Image (tube, rainbow, N blue to C red; front, side, top):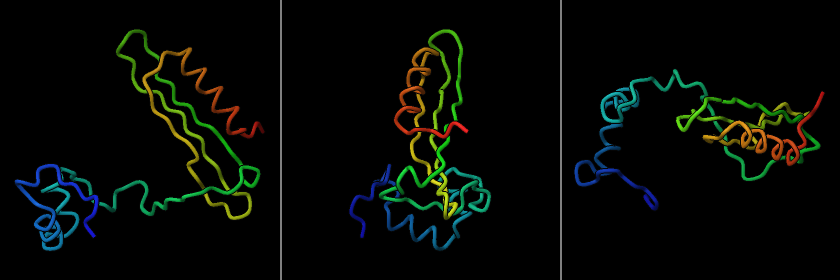
Length: 125
């Protein structure tokens, strides 16, 4: 059951102890006190995330791209993001098909965006 479980500092607090504390304190208090995460899980933007091992065929989905460029001169560029989303035409189920976050110069961001647009055949409507 614990295969693959890692604790950052297990000499200080081991997994069993942490799970007992989580049960005793409640999830919100546990995250505030021991995980340095003061937000309640009720405040999370995405409440119910499902992971899929395969996607529907692209021709069954409307596919869109979102590009968030962070263009600044110099080596201190912020991160730029490119996300490819799909919505199944029949079920309206939404999928994150691809996402990347990189520190890129504008020309490199443009090149990456063109590659992804060709690869995922984004709807142009």
